[in-house]
Image 1 (cartoon, helix red, strand yellow):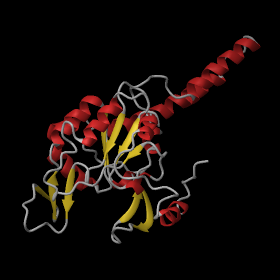
Image 2 (tube, rainbow, N blue to C red; image 1 turned 60 degrees about the horizontal axis):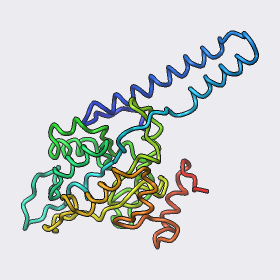
Image 3 (tube, rainbow, N blue to C red; image 1 turned 120 degrees about the vertical axis):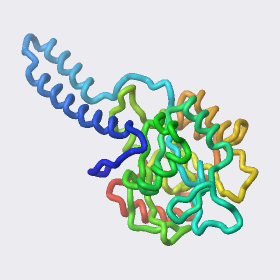
Image 4 (tube, rainbow, N blue to C red; image 1 turned 90 degrees about the vertical axis):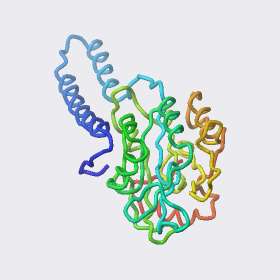
Length: 282
């Protein structure tokens, strides 16, 4: 995680980070109490220590009612294009780039907020994503669990195969799972990342991400986000599922994940090997 905080589009992110610091303070106090437990009897002493050890190490037992979906912006909710096309007027501009809203995106967001906890994670700068979030969501942005930008991504020294000017970054879900949350916890069982760039999920377990096909403003008949659309139907099924990885494994969707069988694996394996934090699954 970056050392310097960033200004989120919501107040939630700072709250989460404050809770993380608070949680560490509480843990230290608990450990001090543990050292001061009276030696009344061996049996009681063992029971007490066992209880304290569980409370410090084990995750909370509260089960969250809603799963967490982490949405990308560009390619999923909007199409940001440079240079701006001459034959089509943009809905808005971001710097010198044209922004096109995806059809039915607003109904889709309302659906997502009803069924899930929703977060945004973009590999763009904070300034740019704040503008896009404000433009797309207005006051609805207050319902986001958090919004993360490029500074929360795991950076590399490599450039994308598709665009030699675009750095390769990863979205490591452990950065979310390692945070203490007020109302429970997030982990592999209840978190899904949605991104149109499969390589960005390479640090994650294989079934905690799906990769919808990239939205293009040229596709005027796109209805993936509409009621009855493929992505919305997919997420509707996920909302009622018991476990995210099981559902993802049993219901393939969108682009294929990148793995050892992919044509580009030799390249991405070199990228992964360059990261000291990455460990291949056994």
